[in-house]
Length: 127
Image (cartoon, rainbow, N blue to C red; front, side, top):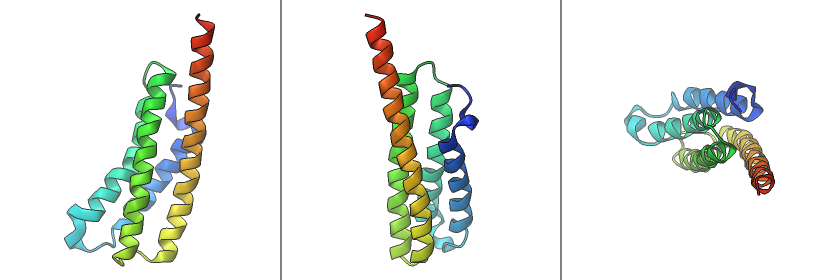
């Protein structure tokens, strides 16, 4: 895989990153280096790791970056819950974003599973 833009999961993660940037603009300015920064870093990490993994030489390398993207997705989910608890974000908005994030996590899981299966097939074929 070399063109990350062809992956539906990358497209959804990119749209989510833009959404998080827009949502977090309304957070208190005193939280710029707290939840705002953490959420933005985590949301950008998802599509960025997918893109970087696509540029690697093997499915095993790609899978490693997809795992990192999954970790960032889980981290972002926590930050959304925290922002809701701190009343920086309305529950309805948080639930909507988390629903989209859950879809991305399912897609990442499917991609990991496919990459692992393909890698096992390649390993078995080279014996």
